[in-house]
Each structure stands twice: as structure tokens, then as C-alpha cells.
Image 1 (cartoon, rainbow, N blue to C red):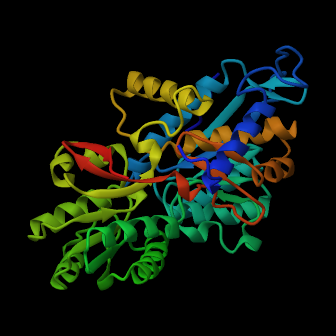
Image 2 (image 1 turned 90 degrees about the vertical axis):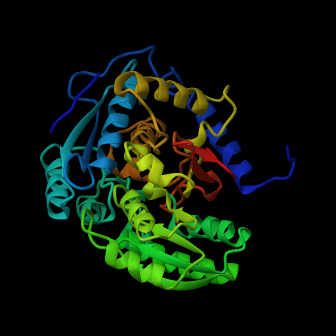
Length: 407
């Protein structure tokens, strides 16, 4: 489907990143505002815009992840194209070519190839599940086109020597696991079971949680892998609960996360449940899920509980406007992380700062971006392409059917 539309004074890593982000934003004279090299609003001729290709899970088992990201793309595109993006001496429109990969990695790879070779996109984004993102990685490297992944799984950007055109917006597994392990230890839980998704995201979770729990002094009592999305998780749940754990970590993306929590409750487990950030979408608390999820904890970018910065900052104001438009168009906003929106803005910023839509120059400027986005703080570097900063994570619990921040 193709879419087009016009307290403390101490210096901390997060404080330095915020300062750097502010400098970056100021140097650009603001998003969409005239800056150096902008000839007072000269519009680029037709066909000279910034073209981005997206492959998303719009149907199929992972549509709960893909559809909200497409909605985020549409809102951000509308905002950017109010005046266009100043690139060199022109204001260029941003155009999107959006395809539905249905959750099929082979289809995602074909779509990425078509977008890169035939459509001539300047950058790619997409893959809300690790398998489709990994399928697009090879295309990005072969075609030398920047690719921003929206999926969870550390292997998407590692090893870096073979991922030079690839960037990941979601938090790293290690950062999420350490936050969860500290929470579990603070609740004086001594034995925890882990239920991890089948696939690359689950692999990252098993490695990260195993190490984080060991460091926190918590015993991993059971480690069971979940079946593919949509399949019955009861066998894995029985394995986890048979170990009589004090807590259960579910490391999976929506819609599996809510289904697994429901299976745990039906199996008689009434202890605490902890989720990674991939669990959180609009679907997670829709319908009967809200009652099942009550009291569950999740680690998630702090966008889940509102803007991270004071309401007068550019990022906070952008997010406030984004949420308003989302509610206006779709009737509600449950705090999912709008990674697709951030991906488009990061690409637009790279084009603006590099004064070019050349793929190589976009890549070079992407890997040095430090900026505050809708979902959190990104700190890309030549040696780090997983850009979500750990300081952007918070702990939330479901209280009266809504996410509430607890730390």
C-alpha cells in the first residue's frame, strides 16, 4: 500500500545527552523553521522530496504492533509537510511508500528490495518484529540504504561491522533486563521464572535476564520458550508455574504478552508478573485484557507516562500535539512508543543537517545523532547503532486499567 501526504547539579549521562540534544536542536533552528541555507521557504520541484520506504505488519498476527506505527507515521508526515523539511537550499516534502509485510520475513525482504531499487527510497524503516527487521537488514547492507528498525532484538544491530547501515530505535535487552532485575530484587523475590518468545527477541531476553538476575542475586527457577504468535502458551506456562516461582517475567511482544498473562492467571498463578517494553501497545489494555493485566509491571520508555521533559521543551510540545492528533483521529491513546514517528524525524533531521538526501550522507549523520524523540532519548554513535538511551526507561504498573509510573 502506498501512502503520500503533504534537582541535582551532578553531571549525569542523561543530563549530558539532554544538553547535547538541545544543542543539536538549536543548531537546526527548530524543526520546520527556516535556518541557514533556507531561502525563505523555496519549495523543491516535484520529485525532489525526501522519500522513505516502510515495511510494516499491518495485517496478520503482529498487526497490534504495526498498525499503531502506521498511524504515527501519518501524523508525523502531516506535521513535517506543513512547511517541508529544509534540506540544502530547498524545502522538500517528505513522502512515504508503505507496504504491508503481514509478518512474513521473506515478503519484508522483497518489499525492502523493491523500495530500494525500484522506488529509489532514500531510507527504509519498519519491521516491528525482529524476524522481519532482520530480513530487511541484509537488503539495507547490500543496497547501502539507511534502515531504522522498529523491532526488539539486539542482534538487529550486531555485529556492528555487518550492520553499518542499520539502526535500532527500541531499548536494548540488557538495559530493560537490568531495570526489571532491580525491581524484582527490591520486592525481595528470590525465585523467578522466565517465559520468553520464540525467536530473536526472546533470545535477547533470555541472555539479558539470565545475567541481570544473577547480578541481582535472584534465582532463575525456570526458563521456558513460548510458541509462535497466536499459538496456545499453556504448555510453557505449566513449565514456568511448576517451579513455584515468586515472580514471572514474560519477555514477548503484543499480542502474545497479554495472552500469556491470561494463561498464567487461569493456571492459578496470582503472583507478580513483569514485562519487557515490547508488550505495550494499545491492544495490551483493550477489552478484557485490562482486567487480566491489572497489577502487572512493565519496563518501557517514559513516553508511556507522559513527556519526559518540561512542557516548554520542543520535544514535549511535539509529543503533546502528537497525542492530541492521535486521539482526535483514532479515539484514544494508550501510551505505546511511537518509534515510527521518531524514525521519520531522525531521517528528516539527518537530511537537514547533511543538506542532502544522499544515502551515504544520511547514514553518516544518523550515526552521530543525539536527540530527544517521542519515545525517548536517542544517542547514536559510530560504535553504537542501538540508540535508545537507558535513562529513557521507567517502570510502570497497570492500575485501574491504565499505566501508572512507579519509578
